[in-house]
Amino acid sequence: MMDNKMIVEGSLKAVEGGFSFLGRLPYYRGLGLSMIEDIQVTVDGVVQPRDAVRFSVRGKTYTLDEMETVYDDRWNFGEKAQIIVLNGGLAPGSHTITFAVRNRVSYLPFVPTTKDTKELALAA
Amino acid sequence: MSKIKRGVSLYSYQNETFQGKMNLEDCIRTSAELGAKGIEIIGEQTFWGWPECGVADADVDNWHRLIRQYDCTPVSHDFMLDYKRYKGRIMPFDEQVASVRKDIDFGARLGMKYIRALVSIAPEVLVAAAPHAEEKGIKILIEVHAPLHFDHPWIIRHAEAFEKSGSDALGFLPDMGMFLHAFPPVWKEKFMRLGVPQNIADYIEKAYEDRVLSEYVILDVQQMGGTGPAIAMAETLRHNAAFEPKRMLDYMHRIHNIHGKFYQMNEDYVEPSIPYDKIVQVLQQGGYEGYICSEYEGNRWIEDAEEPDSVEQVRRQQVMLARLLGETEVPTVKTSPTASADAEAASLAQAAE
Image (tube, rainbow over all chains, first blue to last red; front, side, top):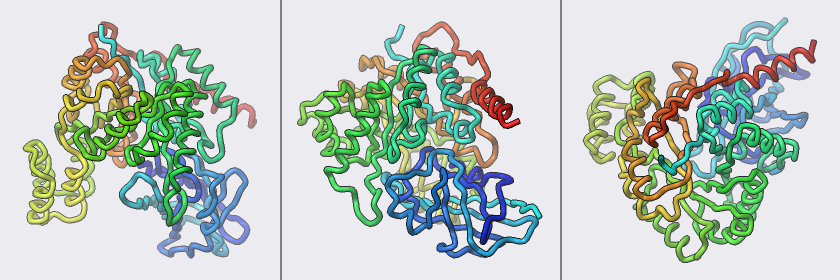
């Protein structure tokens, strides 16, 4: 659900050492960060390494490994998290971004991965 | 006049609230205008921070102010209990019970009568939390949701544990989706958009109508050459069935809230897959006096093709329910369902100038 609303339009920007965009959890509620099993970002067909991804909400930034044991912070319902990828940066212009999130949801008899792909432009 | 009352689970408006198009005031005002004065929430959808970070008193005060302003009644806080919080191990029993106690306290803080437990939670956890619920004047209701139903051994185990406990703080919240009497048209259309051929989609719809066992349907679809989405469409029959509303009658003394699940309300105020006329009849026969809370779940089935209009869908269901309950007034939306969120956005924009 909300698959096509995961990536926030127009949110791509350059950051120190890479780029970032805003992402939302495709779910009807929020989740504690320890239950976010993986976030995978693909740029123009190239999967970015897991250890290059950072997740940032309300001024706190985590690596994906750190998130696995974070029990006192959340990705709230509809909350726009900054997804940072430290890949050395992107060229200005249009890029195809795929954002995939894998959750561990207690009541589901499967582990869902949901993804969204959008064209985002990076200003020169 | 029926003693059954109408309400809305704010889950119904998720497509709009997720995007910030409706805020809490919009949700409560719109429901109240429709005469659906019982408000049910998923605590962690409506209140950012719950449960890991807690909820500020100011947010709870705002909730109570809105409930008073629009003359509504808090019905249920639906909690989740993430017992898989820790990677690779299940949350220990005592911690699960402590977690439920926290949700009981939060429900009480919001003035709720009930908290909703997901059906995967073990009965022993709820029984252990029951004395605290009694103290706080809260009932814990386990949501009986497809593929489970009132004759399933897991639900019977819950019922037996509840009776043995002697506590009246434990009960059931049936989700009307378990009475799926026809294959929902929005499901069929979505699977066809995913590439299921017409003949296979028609076959599955008809097989569902004929009540064919899911495993036979899956095999038939494989033999018709079905792959990927066609198999997935056939597999929905494993998780859904046309159980009988009258199966609720044995449990009426423990049924205190109802999820008025629906996948689509047509312009003629009919839910084509869930028999609400029969359902309301059974509830009246069983002397039910609680709320039926609208729970719109068609959103996820159509959002790839069109933007859901949750308020219009809820309105149509409320019109249907009001008719079935013998009300004479037709529920109507009177103000813009996005008025408060729009005003909030405008004042933020002004402040930024």
